[in-house]
Length: 169
Image (tube, rainbow, N blue to C red; front, side):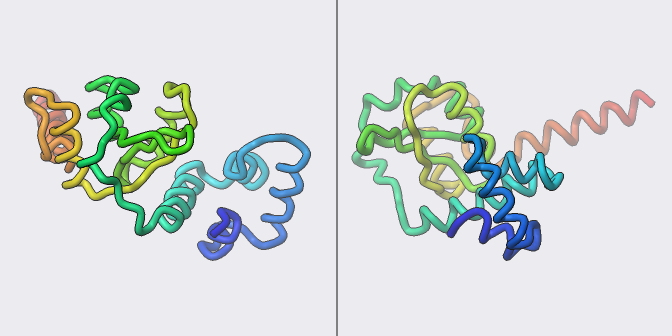
């Protein structure tokens, strides 16, 4: 499914607007979503949400095989980067690096990959529990576990920060 079609289905664009975006894209190389933001003021979060939905549909049914993980891909990202951006490389596929991430982290992981990784990449989406297992197996780090991937530590930290701010008032 094309991003423009999906954004029409979601009510973010009309078909005429999609045609306008495609015409603008033909004049210069710029991502479809960036043009939508610039021409029609669509919030970046909405564009990212539509893009993640599109990616989910495109990769549905593809599952990484961590038992056949290529050890050479693990050096592409550091342990900290893997945990911070919730990515685990799996293998090379016709010159592209196959990375895994979760649906919730997809946009963030893509921004990281396009800025830092010097190879073409594509992602396979996995659930948070599988991500936690993959991170623990491929990039073990003391004090990091499934709770981090599931966001429990972040929520706890935010709650503690909020309580501290409340007491200081």
